[in-house]
Length: 248
Image (tube, rainbow, N blue to C red):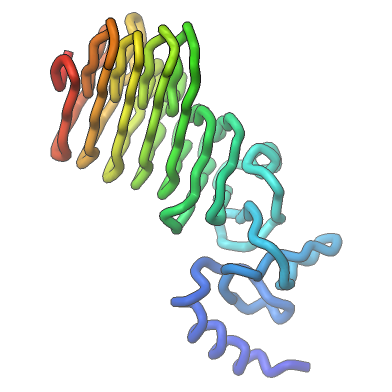
């Protein structure tokens, strides 16, 4: 049998290189990183070698399972779970449930699709969200929760509508959404371009702290970094640039 003390010492030395934690055969904590994944055999999760995948963790840091897509991991998640994303491109619209976090500790993780914050304490950290389309309707990269408070940390957002419809970086709803330490870049060819927008009759405030926001309408529409027809928008620090004005 392997010496668990030696394994623990090795794990500690490797943690700065390997990142977050999964359990090995001896129940000690080691790093999840490139070329290492979770091998599931019944109720036992161990370390194996393989490709990088979407990883699901319980709130105590123990691994649950790995998945090929974010959608599958979210479907298996429960309150308190964390879904960790590897580097790469994920082409899917997702909804993050209440009390679930989707995180990436890398700079090159991209979600090509709309992310809906599904409830209170839904959280996203360290990802890039990209929506590009040619639509007569509105396109949004992030949709706020219908209730509660959802959070974005270090999330970079790009929305481009090459059609006649509007483009939004963050589209608010009746719940609050808080975005911090990221960026929003919105472009619309013939519609309005708005970095963060609270629509008419919506009750949830939108908060932006230390985000760089750019909203450019290159055709008949207008471009605002922040605009509201409903709830309040609170913007502090960062930059705000719109082709029409920073705020409406």
